[in-house]
Length: 214
Image (cartoon, rainbow, N blue to C red; front, top):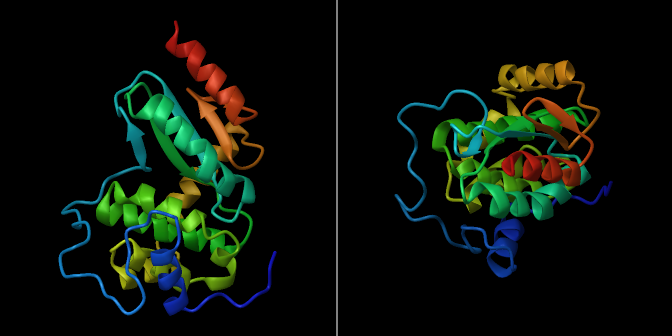
């Protein structure tokens, strides 16, 4: 793990604007226009974040820790494959589960992301992807990194940063941890198809394909 000092907010935002990563945000010296970001929900959704068909017969649950390098790799490479193969067509129900264990900032990052879900809904997925892509900066730059990513996504910086710093959603995250323990999840990312724990993403995809062909 690098011990370099995390980048300043100004450098962070400028890098997002200049880089190839397609994040909706501000370049250096700019501020989001009023009303340009997603609208907040009137009522927060219950339960964990869900994608795909909520009534699908097949459910894939994925347990992740924001500080886990394997989860970060899955987020960058595996999840887009899952989304393209199964979610865009509505073939399965996809459930994000948090399994924070590496560091206290794992709990903070998950809580910040859950605040996005409960306040905005689907922008959770873009925020989660952007935050995961920060790698070791999640540990080195917390809690400001949660606000930096929120601002780049045109979300409420203060709301999300404070939710992460204060671990606002620990109870919900603990419920996911309890489910992981009950299922016997050995580590992250952990893949579960209809209650069956799989060893890898490849095994999960093989199981999904077999179920879909029945």
